[in-house]
Image (tube, rainbow, N blue to C red; front, side, top):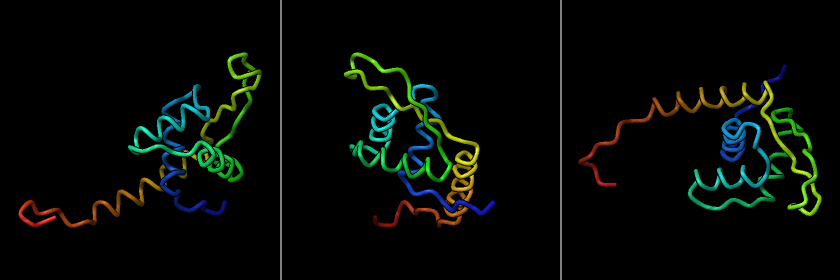
Length: 112
């Protein structure tokens, strides 16, 4: 299988968030968690377009839940990370860890 390549920041955040949310991983909670960890809001449209791209690449899979009255009869689309997606998360972490370890230490006396 051809390597997927490294994940972008948003892709990595979405996959990690889906893994953390488990069975409750659908659009609104995913966007809320990502925004909380990033420290600023994220566009729900951007979240969904990235999730669509991740699904097309085989890194996530989705299923439609039951329609609910509080959503006007619309169903929630739940996401889960696939085995391939989990491999991409680990591959990206491995590369980022190597890069972090190669950074010079910050000197407290040096101006910012």
